[in-house]
Length: 212
Image (cartoon, rainbow, N blue to C red; front, side, top):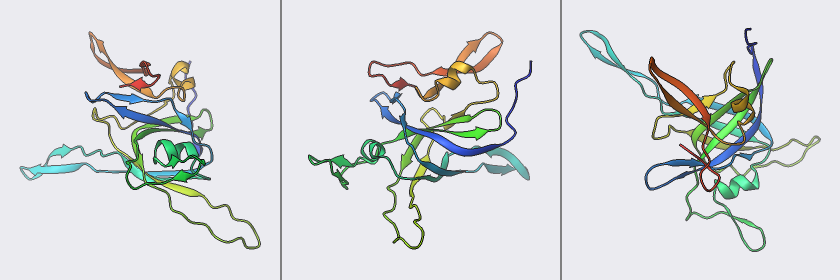
């Protein structure tokens, strides 16, 4: 029996982030995804284009240059959890958010989905960083206009080359329903007839994160 396929996609929702930890051996661990409500739009453009090496009068070899994606994530408001976990703003004894120039922001996986006419399409970008949003607003006039906040997102490849993953037409129910429980991690399964690409939800480590 054939699987129904999406013909169109629309709407962004279910945005989550999951913090990345890299140990001394270079092993990547993902934390539990945290919801970021209020997504308005997401626009990411590919970063890096293939280039050609010319010899014998023609394009002798094409060099892959996938450097990930760059763009903007627009939200109604950046959640306080993202500000403290990723942008590294700190809460003082009076629960006031304080921004310091002496701390580095954290990297994270970005998870989200687009609606489809048949089924939602779920994505994960594995290695993201975010710039601080602008501080801006305008005065009220005859009608109140909601002021959104925008994060400049850079999604770079992991050390193993992985940039992103997304659900397909035949993704298993286990992987699909668990997309926001743990960051999905692909794996290569040996096969006597060749190499097969498969995947699973990441294996829990002792801290509850996912390792790659």
